[in-house]
Image 1 (cartoon, rainbow, N blue to C red):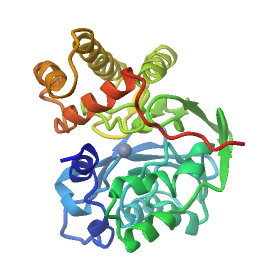
Image 2: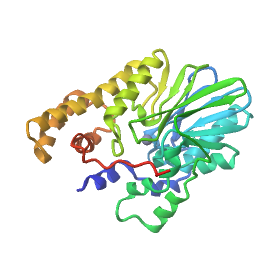
Image 3: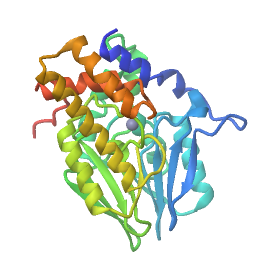
Length: 317
Ligand SMILES: [Zn+2]
């Protein structure tokens, strides 16, 4: 099976799911975690199966409005998030920040935009959302799938390196950091000491490296570790963590690079390289979520270290 097909099998049982409604007796698509001071994490609930959120999100209730970070993989889950925010506050939902372009973080943009929010993201998110998301559906993408991707709500405000959001006197600091796609942001809320990381941080979960540049990613994690040593970290996937968990994730990317570099130095490639690397990943990270990503992570990082990996390119100015 080609890598992309495998990725599809692991990652994207999306389309059937968009039409799944959230019903009262079904498991909730996400669970809300109170992080204090008006900051909340919405953590994907795998038990909801087809109706799950597909990724984590979060929101901050400020003085005069609400900011939301990411909008899930499925519109019904995003609608449920909107309902839950509405149940907590009557303040307007003023902003959505998309941490990156992947469909599991942007599929509810239209729902929040219709509710009055301005959707913001790093400029590459706007450039890639309607194009790069097509690859997750493979060569046999249907017209309906293509139309769905091309109708995803785009950010209407973009930035290059970052932006500050004011909810009254409450300030959120949005920073663009490289590594996962080349257009990722984190949102730091100083009042609650929370960092919403998007997919720059996966908590004890093997990451999706399809667009990754692991070397700058490790540097970005070092920045987060140095700048926010006491913060609560909301990952894109997995449970809410702390700096030690971010360190664990940094360790995974670093180990992965080292395992592969070692095999390459021994002249290994293809199946031989895979057979050398997979047991090492299994031994150290076999208990993490999404263990099925080990093979893809090895393939992508093998390509990356050989300088042969295709990663999305920013549009020419
Ligand atoms: Zn994700």
